[in-house]
Length: 179
Image (cartoon, rainbow, N blue to C red):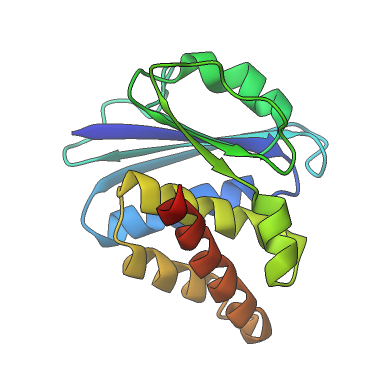
């Protein structure tokens, strides 16, 4: 089975990192993985998106027109990509920055106040970890313990911020379980 996830937002939100962490966790579980980043020349503040393909067989092409799921961290991303998502997919909406919904009846909306929750745990910079763990908990695409270890490994060179990211991870999982 193949699943495609598009992470989208603006540069500086950790879009590419979130997608990389999901891909890494899936790879550690033995899945075939493709990770394709895309971002504008402005980087911080410009549009950034990334596609992750997770499969139990070889991946024919990493280029996906209609992903299974979407993690939308800002309104332009939701508006641009929501209609591309396959029916029965999940669209995570960062409700801290997106006051609207997808207007889709054939998908599951996961409403996550990622920025607000990140501020609550200590820094808005970990909103991407909250969104990632919420999406992972809802979609069940990867084992949460493996994903959490991937987050720890990613920040191993900055050990002082690991506790913050672990708190953010747990908060994201809690949000998903309450929805």
